[in-house]
Amino acid sequence: MRIRFKPWAREELETSPIYIDNPQEYKNKWKNVFEKQAPIHVELGCGKGSFISKLSKTNKDKNVNYIAIDLVDAMLGLAKRNLELEYGIRTTLEKEDIENEIEKQKAIKNVKLTRYDISLINDIFGKEDNIQRIYINFCNPWPRGKHHKKRLTHERQLEQYKNFLQKGGEIFFKTDDDNLFSDSLGYFERSGYKILKKTYDLSNEKDFWNGEENIETEHEKMFKEEGIKIKALIAFI
View 1 (cartoon, helix red, strand yellow):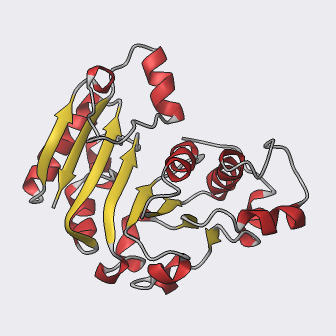
View 2: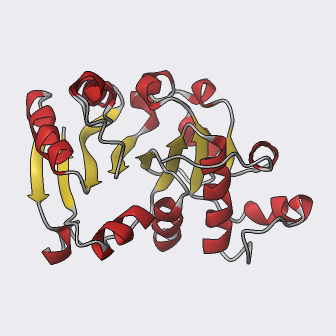
């Protein structure tokens, strides 16, 4: 997704306790950035943060912490503001007094945002980080064959995730793209992951996420309105 440059994003991120600017320094040490010791779930390519905002707020009293990753400051800036909106810290996405907001952001204890290239994800996570789940929601399908290795579900990426996912760790994957979904099933199988569940029409599934709510992203809502069926799977290692 392309997004316009947000001149305020970098300043807000750098002053925010929600944001980690140097994630490579926390490899095998992520438990130290959270107040509560708990398993960690990671969203790859968080975009504007609508998913991670609702997920972390819904589960704020559960024993789990969240890390959301994107490469674009503008996206992360919007994700930060959407987290604040979800937690009732900010009432609008318009500019507000940053200094007054910083102290309030400390109330968001179970989620961190960080900027990094996901193709280099082994630089920032290791086995000591207790990562038990990865979310991949509506990632770029990279439809041209020469670009397939850039897919977040490609074998090259799945092999990297093995280096830090705990034994039995899960990947929750959603997409609107038929070809990406079909290819991804093969990627997971060839990489040694087991497919626990899969569906070609998530809207018609009951309890697909094993008792957890299906939190819709902006893309998911848009695709459903267009009549596009959402494909999903749960895989584990």
